[in-house]
Image (cartoon, rainbow, N blue to C red; front, side, top):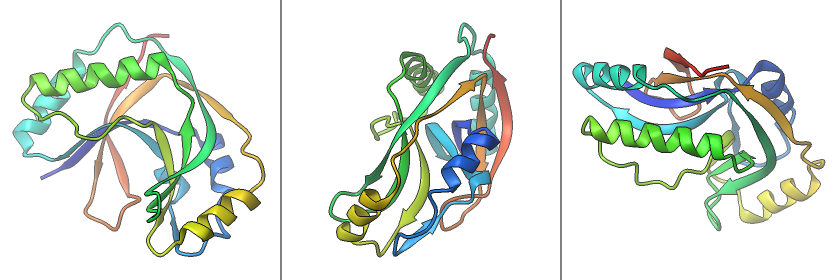
Length: 179
């Protein structure tokens, strides 16, 4: 059974710049830059029939134009039990519309609503034993985050294998946005 999600690829130059944040954080398991992405809609494990329905639903997407996305800060998930370090995306109406439309389309074919709040980001590291103090020190000592912008011309349907997180992710289908 494939494990699927939709997302945005990160261009190589942006991925390289993000990868320079690696190091200096105890307990971090750094994600390989080739696996950086922004998840739009997590689907999970589905049977092959449902996977085909997802591809059909996404094939019908029209009316979305390419847009510029900007990563503008570092952040973390987990509060007092940090679990991930990420580069966060600046709010974007175009991105929010794309996400909401995918959510509606996937619910229309019978998938349950995504229970997580949409928070567009690129996961840089998974944190298992990192303390809040270690994370605070890392964020304080890391040079200022210089915003990174890139053009989003398509979204993709990714599959992932059972792993410890962080990939490998494979592009199963791609969907171009209008220029």
